[in-house]
Picture 1 (cartoon, rainbow, N blue to C red):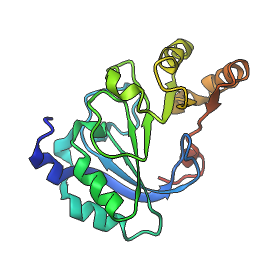
Picture 2: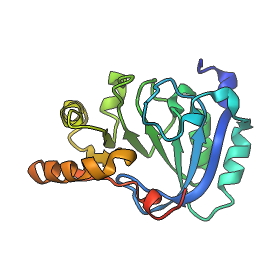
Picture 3: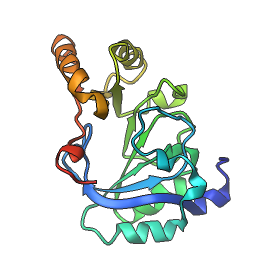
Picture 4: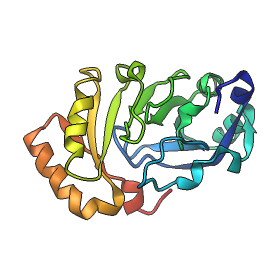
Length: 206
């Protein structure tokens, strides 16, 4: 999908919901999630494959998206997907910040960074590598661990992000029983990393 001016005025929204952030640095905080449709990364273990085709989701205006977010008491907005950077996000982030929101993004980094962000969570995927320009802008590097080879993959990107970037290893949900002990051992040997768990799945919230 091309990032044109027209697509910034309205965006395909798969879902939007108020919950707790379940992962990474902001884990446990109340957050309003905006999940945009469209993804060309194609992770085989993706748990929201229904987000991949942007045409399956209604186009909402920036005003509609922000007005809905304002109905809730928190002022932390997390833009996710799919791959949200398939869209030009400057107008959305500007409108959210004008309404008093902190803006966070969860992205694979496979498309150019657009939008004004208070926090960038980069989760690079082997299926489509991140663009170099986003690496030094990441506040948080979150690597999903599917098998033992992912630790080498994690270290590759840890060397490319800013020294201030927070480093997280997160078990892929369906293999959590197998890989979580591996992650624990790895972090004990490499304490620059931290554990990220999808706590929203444990406590049964979106």
